Length: 281
Image 1 (cartoon, rainbow, N blue to C red):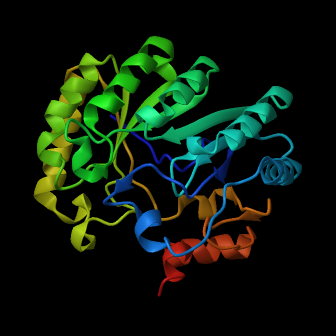
Image 2: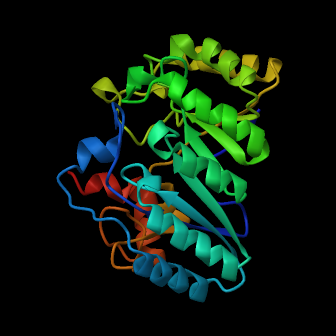
Image 3: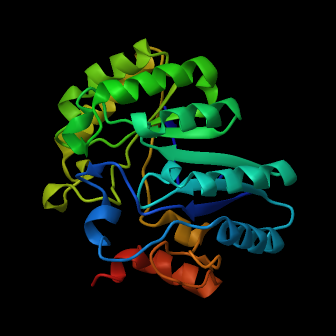
């Protein structure tokens, strides 16, 4: 079994995350961004801000491999101009990797497949055969069709990202079988210590019986030929390891508020667990 914190770069890599948009075509029950900061304005990240932010990081880390990650408070591929701007960086700076997180729904499917053909690393959010239970607005069959097409194009650069909740856990084995049938190789389970909020603010990690069931399903995934990855995610992992590009192109360690990425602030974030949540206390 492999363990992975998806928000953490590999040794020698610097993660640069572009919060491309606050727009989303879904309403997921556990989404921290949608539930906690919906009153904050966040315009689409412009190509100019993207280039400015990238340039600042490259100046700080001239030799590092930069992981340029498309994320967002919404569905990042809805800001297609931003995605294209990030793709354009790769054409001039080959010491980069391109990553995108997407819900893989019908509205963005063609864009997802286009990125796969360009050898982007893709993380498709899919919470199983009862996908619509938590990911409001995304039926499981729609996302499964996207996954099926991706497996024909780029099976080794596609990760299926499953957020396991107490409600979806009973269907996990069935969901893993479905992913196997679709030709999936990599499936990421978690984070079990969530950034998002479950009902009552409880995650799987607080329930030993549910954790035991999750681990049994991980063993099952290996038995049927999948490569499971377990994400145990620190709160606001980028605060101590990478950069967010803000709407004005400046760098921050928090995607909601400008917090300078100084060593002092990174240490403070680590000590406090997450500066992000302190904004709401």
